[in-house]
Image (cartoon, rainbow, N blue to C red):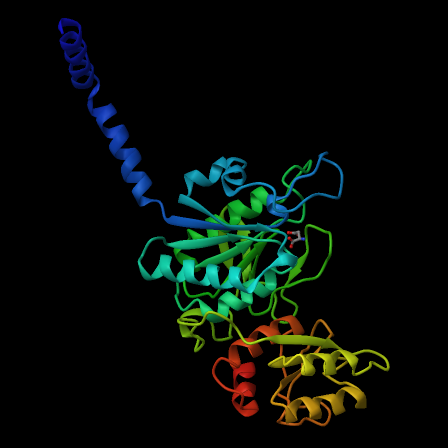
Length: 362
Ligand code: DAS
C-alpha cells in the first residue's frame, strides 16, 4: 500500500513539475497545429503505387501488394502537411476495376464530404484505368471539395519510385484551399490534370499522362499548386448526374473501327442487350457500311450509339461527315470517356438529342 502511495505521489509530482509552460504548450501546440492541418482521407485501390518487385532495377512487378499503411510509411513528409486517414477500398491492378468499386468510392467520398469528415480526398489508383475513374467521379461526386487521384509508373520497390512524390503532391493538392471547385484532378509527374481531358499517353514512362485537348490545369512545385487554367466543362457540384439510390449502372461498350472492320463485335453486343455502344471511329468519327448497318439494327432494338474517334486529339463535333442526330458525337471525349458519359446519360434519358447536349456540356 505504501509503495502504491509513493508511486502515486511521484506520478503527481512529475506531472506538476514537468507541466511547465513549455511542456504544457508542446502538447497543446501539437494538438492545435494538428487541428489546424487540413484533414485528408486517402482511399487506396491498388495499382503500381502499391506494387512490388523482387529487385529494385527490374521492370516487371506485381501491382496491388502494399497496404495504404505501408505506402504511407514511405512518405513520412506528408504527416507535416495534413491530418491523414487511410482507407483500403481495394488492392487491385486497375485493369480489374469493378463497377462495385466505383460505386463504393462514390458512396465513401459522398459520405465524407456530406458529413464534413474531411477537407479533401486522395485516391491511390492504378494508372491503366485512372482516367476513367477520374472522369466517372468528376461527373458524380456532387461536392466542391477536392478529389485528387494519383498512382505510379514504377513499383514502390524501384531504385527511384515515382509513387512517393506523386502521393506527396496529391496530398498537398487535396490539402490546398486553392483546390476547391476545380473538379476531380489527377496528379502525376508534377502535372495537375483535369479529369475531363486527362489520358494516359505512354505505356511505361513516368511522364505518362497528358491533357491532349486543353493542356494541364497547372503544376505542383514543392507541394504548392500553380494553376494556369480551369476546366470549362461542367463537373462535380454542378453535375446533373445523381447516383443516390442506384445499385448498378447501364451497360455500355466500345467498338473500334479500322480498315474493313467487320460487324461481328457490334452485333454480338446488340444481341447481348448492351444499353449503349461508343464507336471508336477512324478519323473524325467515321466507320464503314457494315458498322453503319449494325447501328441501324441496334437502334431498332433500343441501343444508344455515340460517335467518337480513335484519334488522340481533336474529338468529333457536329461537322462530322454525314452527321445524323440519332448518333450523338463525343466532342473532346475519348472513346473510354464517352462510354462513361453515355453510361451516366442513360440513367436520365435515351433521347439522342438530350444525350448530345450532355456531350457538349460535360
Ligand atoms: N496495371 C497497372 C494498373 O494497375 C499498374 C499501374 O500502372 O498502376 O493500372
